Length: 464
Ligand code: UDP
Image 1 (cartoon, rainbow, N blue to C red):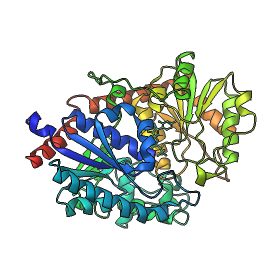
Image 2 (cartoon, rainbow, N blue to C red):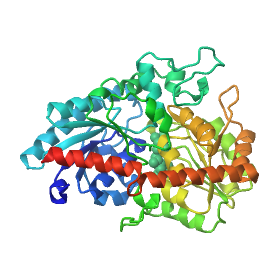
Image 3 (cartoon, rainbow, N blue to C red):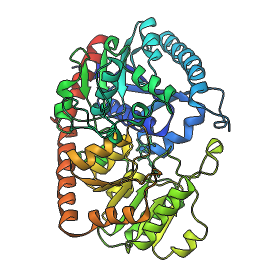
Image 4 (tube, rainbow, N blue to C red):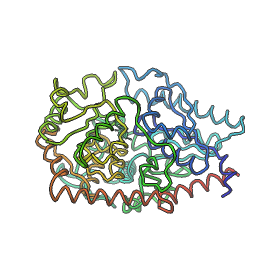
């Protein structure tokens, strides 16, 4: 590959506009830039701050282009994903099409569009403009395989309510292990259509990239349709967190003020003593569930750092702490609205990650070797939790009661299992083993590194 020529190959990237989809695509863009490609991300104006929350240093290598999706000042109280979808399709396809035309006139014609797999229409935009279309999957291979099978009418749910379904490459799955959109189609019809719809035109994508790595999902990888040009390119995290021998000069740091304070707070805690709790960027916990988690943290003797995301206009009443909790626990714990999660997970004081098991959080905990307590909420999180507890054996999953609430005694029991005794030591050993595999995958010559280089070489040659 001639570096000079490859440098000018231009790649557009289109994330689904939410934090958990922006983060991996931004990291992938940064990885492309470090492989001498020029990367531009296209996103709605309202997501501007999400890029800074994701990884400010990646912005030094990646260009951003924003468009209006009609919600520049934030989502309205009556927002629904269902009504937003046609809006995003319309505004996004126009913005991407116009950008390709503009760059072509300016002599910067992109060679391909890497789009979030949720945005299936983006493949048509790419092909209509004569460039390659590359689908980027931000979920595990296991979850992709389940949705793909669902779309092809293959069995993905147990025949009996308490039974199990056998899916090649996976452990036996009960109903509680299946993505919630499939397990409860009556509650999530739109999401089920959108997520299984990802695979409708995937065989027409020029490449399919997955934010996972070969050794993590070797068996299910084999089972995924051979017809997709599938490449595992993850974990898509800043190299500095992946033990790269050649970390970038820019040090990752959190945002100002409170966010940085939580790292200082961690500095004062003993090694492995802190329970870090976060339910990601979207989950909304009921008052009852918040009360149970609060109770468990109070009962535990460990210091805790808890991200309690303030609900947005359309999530009123969710994520609210019991009155007086912050004051009553100010000696023991710290509650923040957001934190630099990777810095936190990489901190030596953190001994346990209480997580909803979003795919990014799962990969982030895994790559930092932090054992987990899985409290899945919805979507792919039940399946990720199953993998964490039963396949990678680096965490434990809570049991819910008949009201689907996890009680404080159960949360406490699971935290103890991770933090104490022989079982805790075993979970930590396993977590460190997976961390090493992840680092191997992205290190020079590792499976993900090779795949990215192969992808870059293909793009560079199609640019000549
Ligand atoms: N995150 C963060 N700080 C927080 C909470 C979350 O940086 O306080 C990041 C986290 O590191 C992850 C993303 O937000 O990259 C959440 O994605 P995930 O797939 O775990 O869950 P989602 O938010 O999509 O449910």
